[in-house]
Image (cartoon, rainbow, N blue to C red; front, side, top):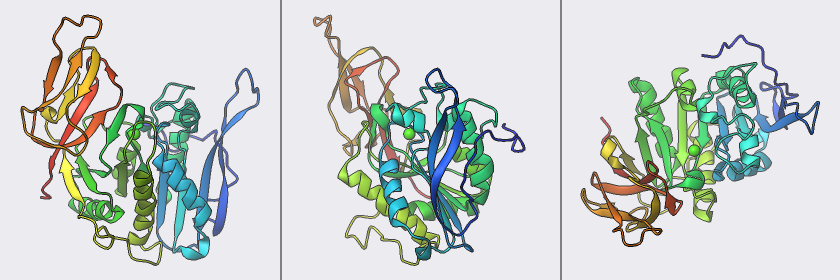
Length: 342
Ligand code: CA
């Protein structure tokens, strides 16, 4: 665990408790061969009218996921202090070095931002950013929304994502926020390796945490951007920060959010060899256990039969791998089963 008393090397001209609209940077010192006294300037905005709840939004925790940076930079430009009760803090590109490099992980220290929490004040660049967020921003927040997508290697049905939490009160508040977001799907995860995640750090503080998986493939679509834009406004409305009602799926003439989970190992189909994957089924298809999902071709030994991969469970195809060429162990398909709230 990082030590919260550790001093941060990051500086900022922003006052996270001040009333008004401030758009500036977290300045992360970074001395390189091309910039001796250089720094990385991570964009951040604080929009506040004082008393009231605080929401914190982040995008590009992984650098190749784009709905967050698009929707959140729009929010920074459109939201004014007189519209809010409380405070909105926005970081549209949390892992800016990864975003600039169009990569999931930081090219500077190779770190996954979502395994760097709570971070270290004197750590590498990714770790310093995580530490600043953990010690200076998260303590102020009542709700945190971290907007993810599948990145270059995965594609998802658009979903708002929460974790199964042991505290019933925190779980019901989190489920309500997930529904308010207004995505077509809600995914409930039981994380296998939760250490180092922003998610875990926020949840352990007893706050409401919401993540998303809004498409992927290293791009964004009009639909996924709209889900992100409506979602962040809905969260502000749900927590009373915006004086309006969340725009529900029902109000928009849409089917209610479908709540799913992937609780079994067999929900995940991984490549059993290296080769070229031919999908038989697409995102959103309903499959039965045993259905063929696709096959891996061995183009350099074309006399060899393709290796067929079958569904390990019945459900909806929630996520699929993007690259055609796959390596043994790569995620090909994830099936979601309907989740019954306990
Ligand atoms: Ca992600």
